[in-house]
Image (cartoon, rainbow, N blue to C red; front, side, top):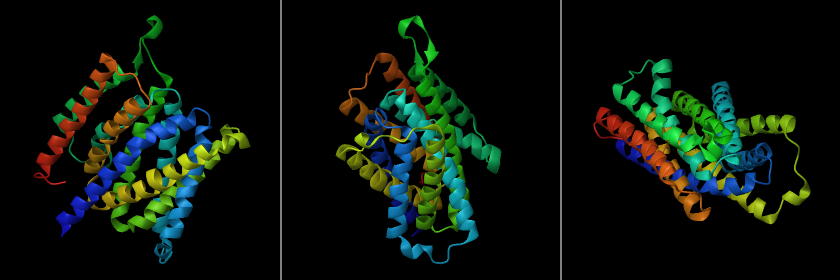
Length: 297
């Protein structure tokens, strides 16, 4: 029974990565004209309210520990999306997708620091390969310069905060109701996002709230936020943080595919080599983790 629950959790998380992969394209179009902070604040607010209504029975018996867990997860989730979406504004959607998933390399090191899990040579080797891939993806030698893009630096920052978020969920989801925790983190994340947007951004004019934007927001809120984070929280309850981070890393593949196919993102030899190295680093980590778990999820 436990094996079936793990399999279902893994499949649900895989579906979430496909949805998140498509969301890079939707967000890229949106952040070009709409302030990123307000965009994701509205997105998370819609998702949080919808989740609170759908899972209203889960509010019975809510405890102080649930609120603390939701606040911690929500803070790191909100910070991650701010960095990621500001990064998306200043880089390509495919780069943003691949660089975000550097958390698959960061998580083992955080588990070593926080949980005293053993760090393996394989993890170090995978990290070095990923760093080479990051260099190829994020260093821009246009115009004779060889400097990292600002958007890529912000995206790498989001990969660290996403790694912390995965670890926080792993430590809190075991004793919490996954549906309640998923909604609580969305509501707390929206509070963080509204605070940032109100302080650092100008509220957009009414002309920017087009029907197309509202359709994008509804897709992002209901599918790429509420549904996807319910899947992630369920997975965090039944799978290890490292396994969750590995499955989530497939998001970059789907993100790149959607970005190149729909947005015509450039695919030069250098960028392709960066994709290959990033993906290879994830595969190395996956294979090592499967050996440690005797082939299980």
